Image (cartoon, rainbow, N blue to C red; front, side, top):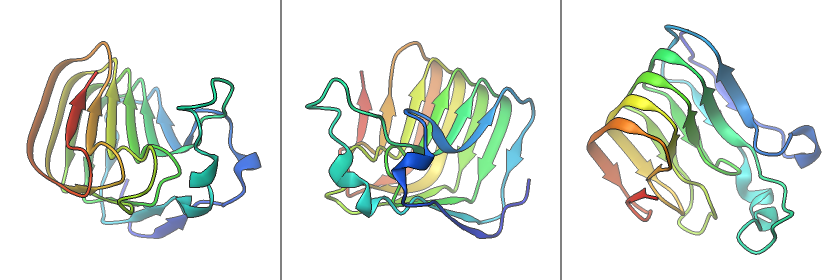
Length: 162
């Protein structure tokens, strides 16, 4: 898929389910997403509602681009701006390669991890610029063979493994 446009998310939180991706790809093989397009999450109005660290009944805000149960995915040259929550999330993915990804949000944007990896294997992220108010890359539980090279991080908390 060659994505060259500028896609803006709605600011109305009622339009999203809890923990979903604003743009979500799932259960596909051999997806290639390139082209230099931008996903603008317009998160600034949603960030005050990002209270999951203090409220156990909170509604998770949407991730800009979420990949679920994908196999052999290539993402190159896309941009993610001002996500309401994580910018890019990989959940139960295999053989993911991300390069030349640009991620940007202000230093005070809460829980806007650049790339979050969970229960995935053979993930390679390289040659990317990530600047957010939270972790540049967060590595959650159940991962194997994750390679991160030539990442420029800041603002952000670096790479976190939990």
